Image (tube, rainbow, N blue to C red; front, top):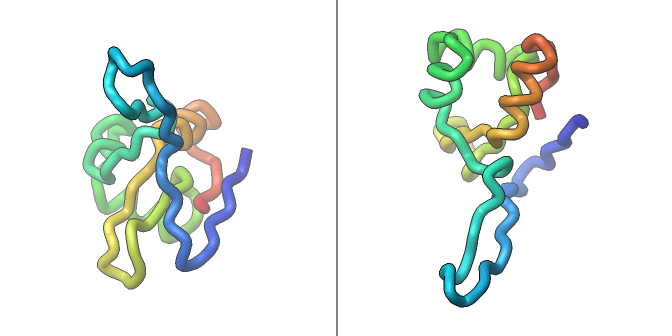
Length: 93
């Protein structure tokens, strides 16, 4: 599944209401947002190699938490899993 990113729109994980006895909100584990450091460790890549893959469009789909070149980048766990499963050939968002 290919995810499209629309410039200026930040996508957040799906939140679900938990039963009152378990707290207010839960995040779907597949939508957990990972940092580049977490993804590079998991994929056994350097941060630079992951950043290069992101720029070339050959890395996992990602989201930017804000506008501008210094906005933090995050990856959904499900997108990283799919990218690794597909042999690291998926396209970036």
